[in-house]
Structure formats: structure tokens, C-alpha cells
Image (cartoon, rainbow, N blue to C red):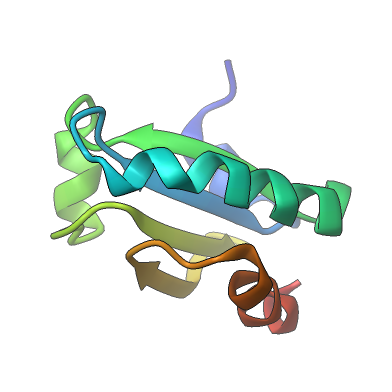
Length: 98
């Protein structure tokens, strides 16, 4: 399995879905991200991170609410948003970073 640091440093932007299994709104995010993936294809990598299983990362990224989306580009945080964002709003928000 690829190391998270390696993934974040890559030239391909990485959208991280920070979620928790107990979070109701988090369950609405996967179909939204599928639409985003369908739109951007291989120009964007999407990964999910369970904040309960990765508490150190959640603290490092200061995740105070879920769902939170983080967009990393070449290792740097380019964009973040908490809450559920519909695909038709999310796609234009991500577009300038890809």
C-alpha cells in the first residue's frame, strides 16, 4: 500500500474525505465524490480517511467536524471545506486547483 505522504506529494491533486462511521451526513458524501471523480477522472485522486482510526492525522489537520474535505496539491493543503457540499457546487470549487 502506498504511503500517505507519497500520495500527498504526488503531482496529481488528492481529495481526502475525512469521515466517521457514526456520522450521518458523511454517508451522503460517497455519491457526491463519485460524481466529482466522473467529472475529473485521473486528474484527481480521492481517498477516504476515518478520523476515529487516524486520530493523529485528524489532530494534525485540525478536523473538528465531519465530513471535511481536504484537497492537497504537491504536499500542500490547497483547499478545505467542512459539511456536505453537493457535487454541482463542489466541482466549481475544485476546478481552479486541478
